[in-house]
Length: 281
Image 1 (cartoon, helix red, strand yellow):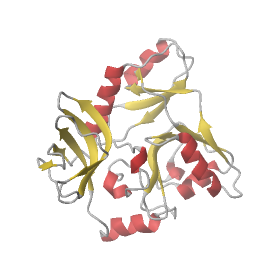
Image 2 (image 1 turned 90 degrees about the vertical axis):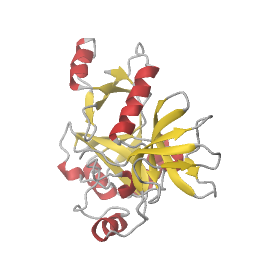
Image 3 (image 1 turned 135 degrees about the vertical axis):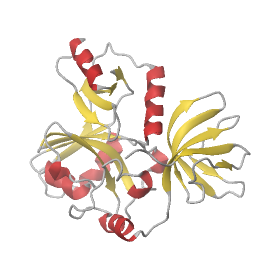
Image 4 (image 1 turned 90 degrees about the horizontal axis):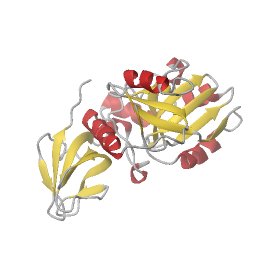
């Protein structure tokens, strides 16, 4: 288990925390027991993802939102107006460090001097997990581990949302069903009608998540990849392994571009290669 960059965490506390999370987020919070986690998202009225996160339940009155992109201070600020009269406090949480690893790594870390077992946050479909523990100032990040961890996210199809991608994409485009991050049977929440229509009726633009390789010198760094005529065909999310003249990433692909093995030129004559659009379920 090794240290990752500082986490962005929003904390929900109060007697109405569970009811609030159930009413606002797209996954079924009612099934989440103390000490367990789930992936989830907060959508806007148009069904677009405002925040993507792991939700950890300390108890029914205390939850942590570990963000996969975005800033905790911004998410907390836009969540607060929805509290109304609920008995609930929402604020950015500090004092946590984020680690990545396996169960075996956790045991080793505890034995190495942690005061208590860290909070385990499972990654759906992965042998890896995230862990939250109180800050220890003698810990240091390992850049090579961070690169390997990010590439594992890409290889396993676990998206993160850069600031430019917030409120831009629908849950189906990020394959949230595969990640067990959405419920189609729970009650209403923001954007639920649009999400249900897409799921049950197949209505909506057929975009999809893909593992891509950006090729060129210099390597493309734009969040939007455009074809030679200027039309966007790929929206880059999290980036992973960097090679000499390429970088692996997760991207939202247009229907035309979302074909395994396809290679697409961009406006600068560089290329985007589609490695895979399928992950084991």
